[in-house]
Image 1 (tube, helix red, strand yellow):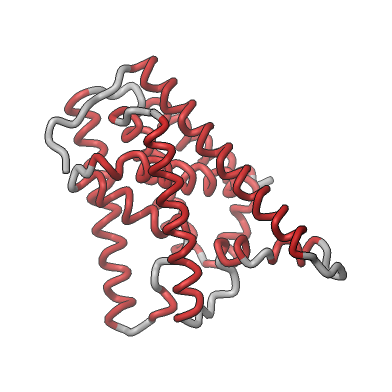
Image 2 (cartoon, one colour; image 1 turned 45 degrees about the horizontal axis):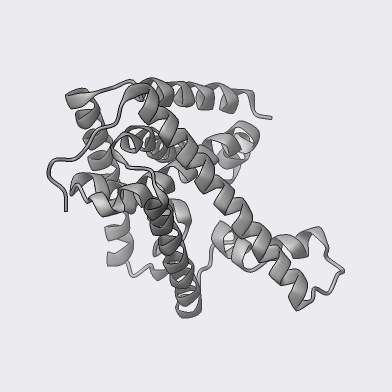
Length: 235
């Protein structure tokens, strides 16, 4: 456990809970400020990568995609993307905060102070933004379907990019997950069968589906306790 990581992560989580109480104009201004700030920072960062022809920096990780999906959905008020954007931001944000509680010191050791701090801030923005965005979502089966459709498109995108671009980074979580590297690390001397791989991916999907249900439960709870908010002008 990383004591400092626990302290700052709990602080961000508490702010997220407090933000769910915001209504009307303060909520909207806060949400747009977070989205615009995140979008500008990431747009500049990836523009620089593009100008330098660093193709291996093309967004691939779930959290990296979340930066743009969340910010674009909010800035352009795209209602059809709201549930996907909020879910991606929530999973990426809270996942990083929880991991920071445990291995935050390793983030500093492996990535350096500046990158570790920026990663923490970016993921914190995702989590805080998701807590604001959930208040304008109608949580129903259609939204679950939208999230699952996005997930399949995202997985297909990862597979295609993985074939086209030689990513040199040692650790990309989505590649580890889809490549079943976790199984190889846990059972290095075992030769896996097709049925075992099938069971592995079914387990991954089940866990992912549980996260969706948890997100919807939290969203509905926030909506009941503090009231939802509808968009008057949406795409």
